[in-house]
Each structure stands twice: as structure tokens, then as C-alpha cells.
Amino acid sequence: MGTVSPFPRSPLQVGFERAELSRILDLYGRMVSAGHWRDYAMDLGREAAVFSAFRRTAENPEFRIEKRPSLRNKQGQWALMGQGGVVLRRGHELGPVLAPIERRLMKLVAE
Image (cartoon, rainbow, N blue to C red):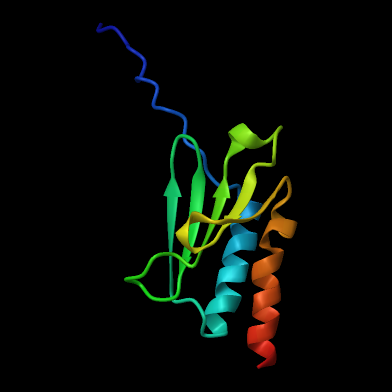
């Protein structure tokens, strides 16, 4: 019989949990319904998981929602980034970090 060798360990990858992704995609769907966003992208890397929302496909993202577990005990693992990489909000919980986008959604629906 042959020898069994283990698979090489792949580098760890940061990802979104089901509840987190559900909350983010719910917000994305409401922004699409309001006619504000048209596309999104996800990047799951070794240090961070990033959800980017675009107004149009060929533009820079309007918002990026980042999850960096290495910052969990410092400033919080969640960050909301605006255009140009400006940090709009940081926190330990996803809900308060998404609050500025939800306020904008309320204004879009009210108009």
C-alpha cells in the first residue's frame, strides 16, 4: 500500500459569517431597490474580508465594509470605508457600523 500524506495547509482566509453576510446583503438589496447601487464585489483575503458596493460597474466603490479580526481587541473588527479609503465608522458590532448607510437609505426612500 502507498503512504498517505496530508494536504498542505492553505493560508487561513477571513470570511463573513452567515448572519453578517445576510445583514450586508439585505442592506445591499434595499439600496438596489432604491436605485442607488448596481453592483457589488467581495474580496476574502488572509487579513480581511471586504464587501464593496458600487453605483456603476466601472467606478470605484462608494462604500467598503471591512472585517479585520486582527483589530477585534483594539478598535473593533468592523470598518466602513468611503470613497478614497476614508474611514467613516469603526466598531465592534456590525449594526452601528452600517448606520450611516441606513440613514442615507431613509433619505433616498423619503425623496
